[in-house]
Image (cartoon, rainbow, N blue to C red; front, side, top):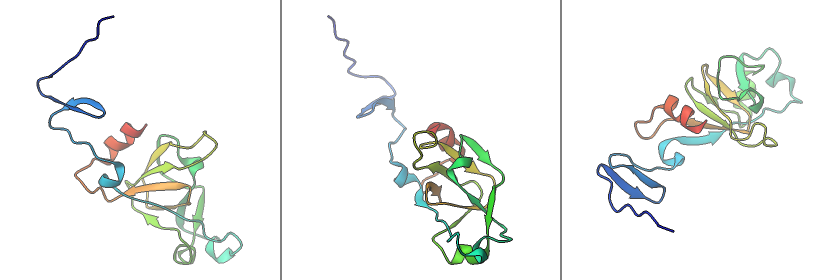
Length: 139
């Protein structure tokens, strides 16, 4: 059996992940984005939900897509009285868990919206990162 060993590839550098172009850098997602999750206002408190105007996203809406509308909405009081957070348009979100059906799926918010705690939100790119590129990369 012959083993092929490549000592040098012009224009590339060897990393623990293999050969990559010399100008590329390797970063963890937490180095590129602020990562947080949302929350769910208490469902028993009608004031948090009735006539709500703030989109509230769950993992059921995350399916390698761009989210333009929500199925549920919360009120301003629901936002300020819970761990829910309002994320800006263009936020990348990922489903954190879900029986293998939704876990790991990503989407991009096309609206300002809140999410439940099962969604990770990638905001404020820390290094000149294109959120659309990361969306396609994570698919």
